[in-house]
Image (cartoon, rainbow, N blue to C red):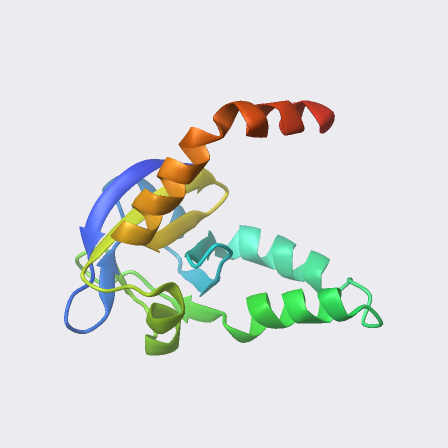
Length: 143
């Protein structure tokens, strides 16, 4: 599973290091795609396959379903770890997430997320500031 927060840099070629503790799970390759909240999602092949199968079963007649499927699937790219444990993030995905030099790679159980460091800090501060409200809403979902 992916958990934790790790600070890494985007190099001049657009590569980002995968945290050492996450590398084994993506050794056979991974999928990087547009995420939500202006970050990128990185899935191992197995979890990506499971998600993609669910996405293609969404109703074509609903505009929101079509839009979400397009967001996730059209932006997806196969990536492989290089000898130094980095993945190459395609230019269009770096632009989508606003990745500059400093990034945060975070683990969210079944996926990694790659954030521009400033965007992550802003998001985290906002979320931490409303954690009680969020916790109350989670209670409605049985958590």
